[in-house]
Image 1 (cartoon, rainbow, N blue to C red):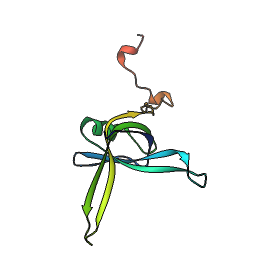
Image 2 (cartoon, rainbow, N blue to C red):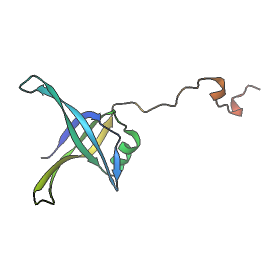
Image 3 (cartoon, helix red, strand yellow):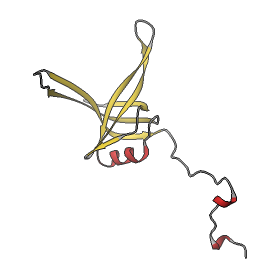
Image 4 (cartoon, rainbow, N blue to C red):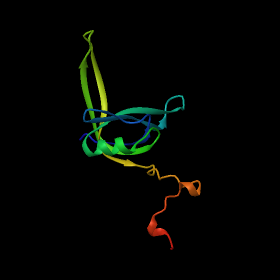
Length: 121
C-alpha cells in the first residue's frame, strides 16, 4: 500500500506546467534528532485535474494545507552517466486550513456601491 498524509505550509505559490500543478510543502518533524533539534522537511508535491485547478486558484505562499496521496519515485539518467533518484508526492485530495480571502471593507462612503433598488425613495 502506497499512501501518505501530510500537513504543512507552502514554501511559494504553486506553479503549473502543462497539466501538472506543483509546489513544495514544508512539513515539521514531530521528533528531535540526536542533538535535540526539530527539523522541517520540504516535500515536492504534484497534483492534476480538478485538484490541481483548486490548488492553483486558491493556494498561496505560506498557506497551511493538508493532503492525502501517494509517493512517486522515479529515476533520471544524468549527462555524466549517473542516475538520479527523485521522490515526490502525488496529491489526490487537498484541504485548505486558511480561510478564503474576503473583499476588503469599504474605507469611505465613496467606496460603497449603491444599487438603485436599495434607495428608500
